[in-house]
Image (cartoon, rainbow, N blue to C red):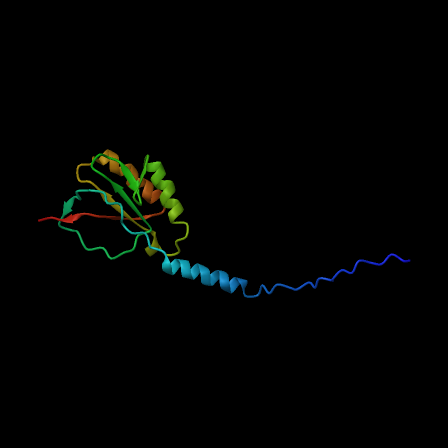
Length: 141
């Protein structure tokens, strides 16, 4: 008696269509961009802004928001950071995906009691990171 072969079913190799994978990926990216929240000022910091006669309403969108509260603590998009160097690195990271100059605006809020020695390094860090500074203040009475 001859040894019979084990009857095995041959598996068919079916190619996976990958032509539309790129379209699906881009649609997912667009979906998440549309559904995500754009960076908003949700810091809830209590900052008494300086007053000036030259304050105008700002309609720009911001790539980042930097704030210094009355105790001198520095915040980047609502998260406390240790110093100006952290601001520079954080703003630089946030600006990597910007294309135009209008997308490089960084909102800067500083309490009116903060000294020049405290806020100047932060302003310098924003500019060295490539941000375009937009300071926030209140209209003088």
